[in-house]
Image (cartoon, rainbow, N blue to C red; front, side, top):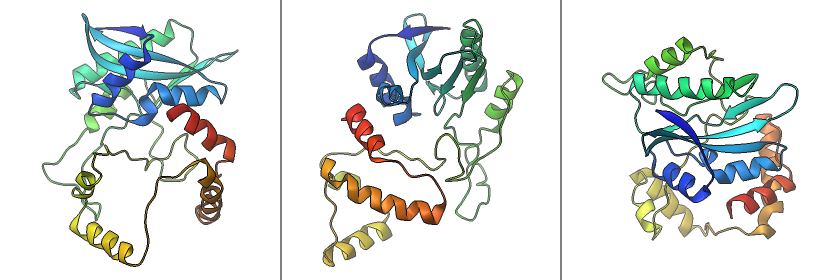
Length: 231
């Protein structure tokens, strides 16, 4: 396998969108948004011959101590430990040769499957071996963050594919969730697509939540830049 830089955003984002480890922070749109924060970005592809089997959005900070951050880790075609080790080993070597001081990753891979009470699900998914394999490659584990803890990104950021018509997505909700939404609709509560004119209301609600949860809220400029990057 080898790592190559990709220059076509459409090719890159198409691979990410179809990958099981898809996340919006792995797209070129997130890279465009981060340019407003003084970072550049690279789109990398992991190839076996001419077949693309992985991708990485690399946010770069240049200067005296250049560093690279791969938000939510790589998109990979599989989670077999040898394959993961080779992919992240190539990524480490790629940036070592470029004189990068440190490389940060936070792969969105389930560590182990647990029930709602926190008990490990017997026979469920378990990828602890991947954490250990990354440590063996020289990556240093920094522990697990919780919610609004000052991390670079929020631990509980989730993503769902929206189907059209929207009723198809609604059918996938739990029966309890569907019931609560229908009750809310009878009370006159509705959901509408927001516009740029609604940002001030969003900022007001976020400020209230930030006072409760103790995190630094976004400013209006952040949302305008997000809308510009993602459309």
